[in-house]
Image (cartoon, rainbow over all chains, first blue to last red):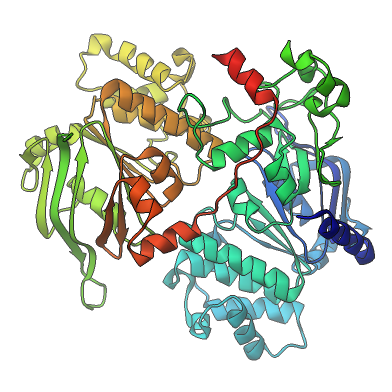
Amino acid sequence: MTVTMERERTSARLERGAPILEIDDLHVTYRARSRNVYALQGASLAVWRSEFVGLVGESGSGKSTVARAALGLLPARAQITGGRIKVEGRDVTSLGPLGWERLRGSPVAIVFQDPFSFLNPVMRVGRQIAEAIEKHDREAKVGARTDELLDLVRLPRSAAHAYPHELSGGMRQRVLLTIALACRPRLLIADEPTTALDVTTQAEIIQLLADIRARLDVGVLMISHNLAVVGGVCDCIYVMYGGRTIEQGATASVLGRPGHPYTFGLIQAAGVARDVRGRFATIDGDVADLAKVFVGCPFVDRCPARLLRCAGEMPPAFAVEGDERHAAACWLLEDAVRSSEEVRS
Amino acid sequence: MTIEPILVLEHLRKSFPQRGGGAPVVAVDDVSLSVGAGKTLALVGESGSGKSTLARLAQRLIDPDEGQIVLRGLDLTHLTGRRLREQRIAMQPIFQDPSTSFNPRRTVGGALLQALWRTPSATRIRCAEELLERVRLRPASFYLPRFPHELSGGQRQRLAIARAIAMDPVLVIADEPLSGSDVSIRSQMLNLLADLQKERGIAYLLITHDISIARAFADRVAVMYRGRLVEEGDPAVVLRDPSHEYTKRLLGAVPQLAGAAVPAWTSIHERTRT
C-alpha cells in the first residue's frame, strides 16, 4: 500500500468520526472457585465503518473474549476489571443487560463459528430470518426483504423453506450471515466463520464478507487463528497473545515487516514454511497460561529472541517503521535495544 | 527407484442407499491407489468427495461393493474376525477430533495401556512412559494420571499420535488430523509425524483438505472429486501444473501469504540454537 493511500485512509477515518467499536486496554477476569482466569489483560482495537479488520491469535489468546465483550455476551462469572468498550463513541463498559439488548443486532451483529448450534433445528430457515427482520426492521416487508437478503448472500430463495439440517455447512453459515444482516448492522463480527469449512467453501465465504462490506458499507471484524485467511481481505490486523494486543497495523505492513516475534512465527507457520534445517517453522511450547497476570511480556517463554528484561518488564507498544499505524509491543523495537548489542548477549 | 507398496487399493467402489429409495449415492467410484513403505500419500478433496469413505474402506471398517484392499501383499478384502483384527493392528487411525476419540473416563495411562495390550504386562508401563516422552508429553509421570479433558487440544492430538504408534504400525491413516488446530500446533504435529516416519519407517495416508500441507509434507498427492480420483502424482508437479479443473479451483482457494521480511533477530537465533 502506498503512503498516499494510507494518508487518504487516515483522513477518511478522521472525517468518519468515532469508530463503531473501540476497545481500549480491556481487562476481563473469569472468576472460579479454584482459580481465576485473566482472559484479557490489555486488549485494544478499533473498527471504523466499512473497514475490514482482522483479529488473529492462537486459541487461548483471548480473541473470542473480545468478541463476547463487544456484544455484552460475557458470562456472569466474567468481570470487566479495567479498560473501556465504546460503541459508536458511547461508553458501554458498564451497560446492563437491557442496554446491551438494544445494541445487539444493530449496530453490532455477530456470526459464530458453528452455525449448527445457533440455528433452531425445528424451525424453517425463512422463519428464523423473518424473526430478525420483524425485530430490527419493522417497516420492511418480510417476504421481499428475505428474498433480497438471500440474494445478497447468494443463497437460492428456496433455501428459506429448508430446515438447517437440509443445508450444507457453507449454506448454514450463509443463513447465519443472512440473519445478522437482517438486523441492518453497521458492524459485523465474524468469530472464526470459516474454521469448520472446506478450503473452497472458506474462500467463498470470505469473498462474500468482502463483497458485503463493500456493498453495504458495514465494518467487519473477522476473528481467525490463521493469518493467511485474514491476510487476503483485511485492511488492518490486530494480533493478540496472552490476552493482550501485541501488534497492530495495516495488513501489508504487519505481514511484510512483522515487529513482534510472535507475529513472525504465525506467518511462518501459516505458510507451512520449512526452516534452514528442513523443519516446519513453528512456535515452540504452549499458549501462555491465563491463570496468571503477566508482569513482563506474555510471550517470553516461547520467544526465540528474548532479552534479559522481557520477563520482568512489560513492553509498551513501539512504532514499527514504514506504516504510521503499525506498532508492536516488543522490547526489540526500542531504539536503544536496536542500536545496542544487548540482542546478541 | 521403486518403493515397495504397503497398502494397495484396487478399483474400489462403494455406494450408499439413499433414504426414501432414490438412486444410490456412489461415494467412492473405481479408485485405485497405493501407499509406499515409509512414504506419505496425501489424499485431498472437499467434504463429500469420498476421501473419508476411502479411508474407512482401507481399514475395512466398511465393506467395498467392488475392488480389493491389499496390505503388505495380503488381500484383506474378505478377511473376517481374528485374522482381520490382526491385520488392522498394522494400520492405525488418527481421527480429526482428539477430544471425541478418547474414553473420557479413562486416564492417559489407561488409554495407552489399553493400546499396548500385546506388550508383556511387565514392561507395559515403561512402554507407555516412553511413548509419552516420545511425543513430548513430558514428564510422563505427570501425564499418566490425567484425563483427556485436562489436556489442551495440541496435547490431546499428541496423545492420539502416541496411541496410534503404540502397536508399531506400518501405516497410519490420519483423517484430517490437523484441521481446526492452530497453525503453530499444526507445524509441531507435522514435525513430530515427520520424525516418527524417519525413525520407524511408518507410512502415512494423510487425508486433508489443506493443500498447503499436502504440498509441504507428502511424497505423493491424490486428488478426489465426487468419489473419483481425478489426479495423482508428485505434489510439486500436480500442484504446480494441475490438469483437472477441480484441482485448479482448490489451489486458487488456498489463502497464500507472501513471505515476510526476515527480522534481524532470526539470524542470531539460528546461530545460538544450532
